[in-house]
Image (cartoon, rainbow, N blue to C red; front, side):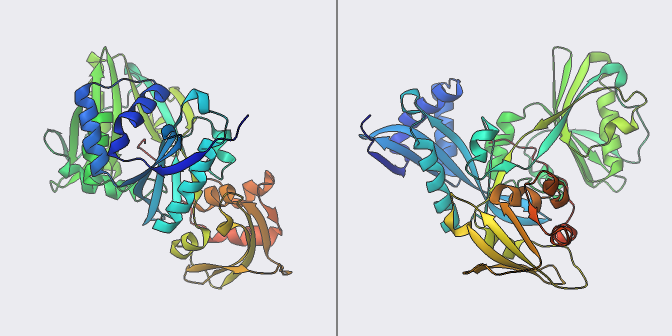
Length: 398
């Protein structure tokens, strides 16, 4: 087979029709002319880099990197959201997507996007390029007679209509408690939430009339689907669940997606509801040195120094030996070691494992059991002690 002459270049509005044709074919959906115009507006509003693989001037594959921010240990990190990866069938299995992924990593690094998320069509495929599972969620299906008991609360629930402005601070207060949730922009609410999460909005106000939680949901064909249940206190959560229970006469069942650490079944009189654990998004650190400089480790009574032997064949700047210094206050840096040295506190791992470990999805000791990390047990123990414990959760999709 003759080698392809592949050119990677930006996908602009000039390529809009070509790009949308590929997307609609690859992801099996159709959009009306009005929807296409709305999509064009969205593409111009949302900060992103869009890349295409072109062969003889024709688009063969494409990928988008959304410029987003995510919470990690309560701090915002610049994140590249990889989305819309698609290839025409005649060009598949010829390395076009691989070239786009490597190119995207380079441009993310140049822009200071130190971590990247994606929703995989196949976990194994993206694992080869350094992405690793970083979050899962629980899905509940609850019959009407299994709903939580209605309880008296000090506040009240009121239906809300109009803009999402009231919800912004509630969501941000909630999302910042998790690793891997998005900082949502006004455009994100406008284009993403409004489209993917339609229906009714109910807000919980505490006794001081401060909004402390909200619910986005819809009822169709005797089923209540909760798109988001966000609360800043147990009182708000109880108030919103009591409000949901008021729908018992008009529904047969309820479905809701919640963080993996949710304890609702423990509070139910009949906890035998249907529960599913669903692996969701993947992540990979784009620039290990820059990421670690921003990352707040746990405080300690001493400085820790570990030698990290890191493998990342698709981002050579992450490949090699690094001295990881973590101060007593939790500030850290990774310094490349030009020549391998003997060090009593050494760990060896790959970029994907390093990512899910620092995001808190898996602990170093467990990863060592799977031989995803190797090294001295004391080094693994010290690293685990310095990684803050937080649940990963992403209530969004892209």
